[in-house]
Image 1: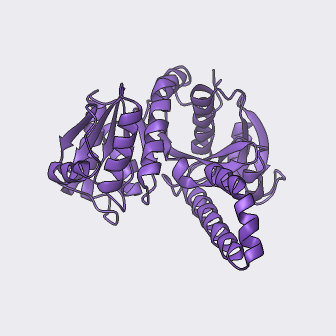
Image 2: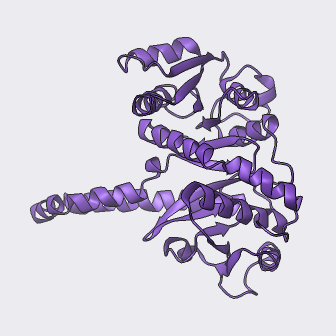
Length: 338
C-alpha cells in the first residue's frame, strides 16, 4: 500500500501533515507514506518528530497552492504539491492521495489528472455525519454547487456501493434531502431526483428532512453540493457550540465539576463518536483514483484518520467496483446497480 499526501495543504501545513503521516507510518510499517511538498520544510518538521520511520518517503514539489487561491492556480503552478500528488496516483506510483488544502482546487486537480470514471457525470464528496446508530452519509457536500437529478441519482449509486464494499453495509437506505417528507415538497431538483431514484433497484425511503440526518433511519442522503456544504458546516458549528456551552456549565459550580469527573468517560465517548477530526477525510467518489478530501483545519489526528479512510477505500476496491458498474450501465441512472 502506497499512500500519498499533499504536505503543504491545510491551515497547519506542513507540520500537521507530517505529524499525522509519521503516526500512521509507525502504526502501519507495511504501508509506504509519501509526503509531497517542499523537501526542506518537510525534513525540518520530520526532525521534530524523532526518528523518521523507514516507510516515510518525500517527493519534492517546489510550489504551493494557498487555501484562498482560485482553481486557475493549478495551471499557473504546475509544479505544486497538489498537482504532483494527482500525477503520482495517475502514474500508478501511489494507490491513494489525501488532500487537506483548498477544497475547490483539490476537487479540480483530481478530475484534471485522474478524470472521472467512464459513465460518471459528476464526482461528489461523500461525508459521514454521526447518528445514534453510527453515521449517515451525505453526498454531495461541496464538489458541485449546481446539479441535475441524474447527478444526484449517481451520487446515491456510488454512495451505496462505497458503503457496501468499504463497510459491508448491504441494502443501504437512500433519501433525498428536502423541506418535507411528502413527495410534492421541495423543488424541481428534488422532485426529479426522487422520480428517477424510484426507477432504480436502490432502497429508496423517499424525501428526508434535515433532522432525519441524525436519527439513523436513513443511510445515504443526496443533495446538491451547495446544500450539503451548508449542512456540513452547520453540523460542525452546532457541535462546537454544544461543547463550549457544556464546558461553561461544567465550570460554573463545584457540584458540576464533581459531576463532570464522574461523567468524563461518557464525554470522551461522545467526542469520539462526533468529532470531525476522527472522521479524517471524505472520499471524492466518481474520480478514477482514490482521493480523500480532508478538512482545512486538519491536525495530526485528522490526518491519521484520513490515511485510514484512504486505505479502506483501496482495500475495498471502491474505484474498481464503480468502474465495473458503469461499464455495464453506461451511466444510465435507471439501469440496474448490480
